[in-house]
Image (cartoon, rainbow, N blue to C red):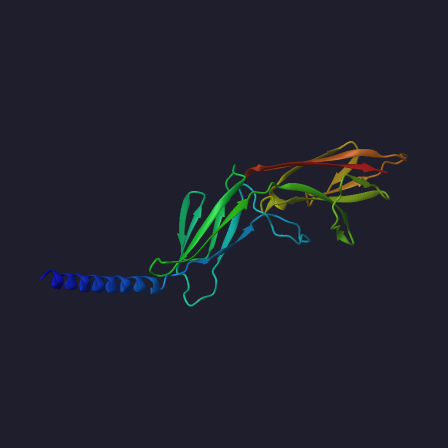
Length: 236
């Protein structure tokens, strides 16, 4: 009787082990949905001169454009869940526009691409660094246009006058029209009426030596972060 019970027990153990092994194989072979990587393109909506070959950089108080690039596959996302710092934004468009904060030096942008059942198809993140707008000076010529090599520290006056243009890199996209400018110098200047960025430095009759400094201060009444100043020297 004891021997018969032992046989039954052994058969039960073998049967149970077979079931567990089958379940384990089912778990192992069950396909697991993969979550791909989403790339994020950042486009700053800021001003750059026409000859600048780089990308406009984001700056405080100005808008940026974020584009989620999802790898090509059989399934396409229907919803994008963005997280900017700690704020969630959902949209059915892979493109998101928002305004850069006034104080942070960088922001963390995250995005999850979802299908129609809210299953994640891909995720990605990007740290967006906030650039500081700056003024850069260039010589300007009526025939050749604006020189593409910036004035470093000093410009030599050749002839009776030289034109100089200031370019406000990474200020608001409409900065060329909206900034208030104040030029000052201990040499003779004439500011162009049609464009605050352009001045004419004039030689003074009877003077063979000319040494001075030109200063420019600009401000944007709609963005307090855009208060800029820069200088360069003039010699003859």
